Image 1 (cartoon, rainbow, N blue to C red):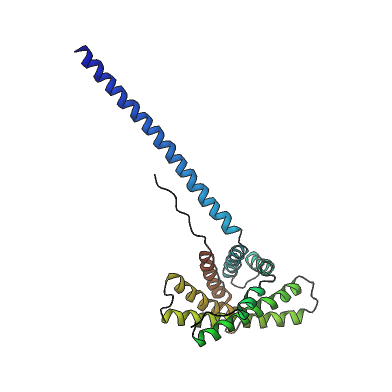
Image 2 (cartoon, rainbow, N blue to C red):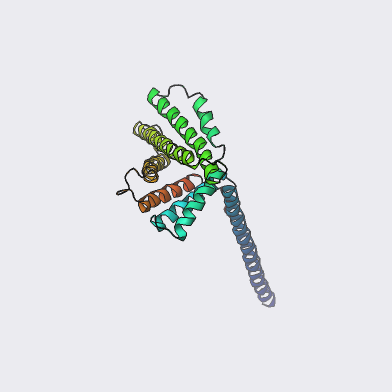
Length: 241
C-alpha cells in the first residue's frame, strides 16, 4: 500500500511538473512568435517608407486632405496644401525618365493596336507632365525668374496629366472588358484613373462651380489612399506554432 501511494504521488508530481514545463515552453514560443510578427510588421513599414513613390503618395494624401479642409480659403490648411505640393515636386525630379523609357520600349507581341497607341500616348503625356513639372518647381523656388512662363508651363503640364489619366482610364477599361486582367487591383486602377481626371479638371479650374477645391481635395485624397494601398509590400508568411 505504501509503495502504491508513493507511486501515485510521484505520478501526480510528474504530471504537474510536465504541465509547468509545457506552459513555460508555450509562453516562450508565444512571446517569440509575437516578437517575430512585430519584427516582420516593422520591416514592412521600413520597406514601404524607403520607397520614394510611397513617400510621395503619403505627401499627396496630406496635400489633398489639406485642400479639402481649406475649401480654397486662406489659412493653415491652404498653407499646408501649397507647401506640400511644392515639396512633392522634389520627389518627382527626373522621374520623367521612367515613362520616357516606357515610350521607347517594345510592347508584348499580340497586344491590340488600340492598347499600344493608348499606352504609348499615356507614356508620352505623363513624361511631358513630369518634365514640365520640374520647370514649375524651379519657378516656384525662385530659381527660374520668368514666373508667367512657369505658370503657363504648369497649366500645360496639368493638361498633359489629365490626358495621361484619360489614356490610363481607357486602357484599364478596355482590359477590364476584355477580361485580360480582371481583378480587384484592376478595378481599383480604373477607379483611380477616372477620379484623377476630375482632380486634374479641378486643378485647371475647367468647371469651378461644379468641381470646387473641396471636391478636388476629396477626390485627390481618395486616389492618394488608393495609390498608397497599391504600393503596400506583400506580407511574409509567419510560421504557425
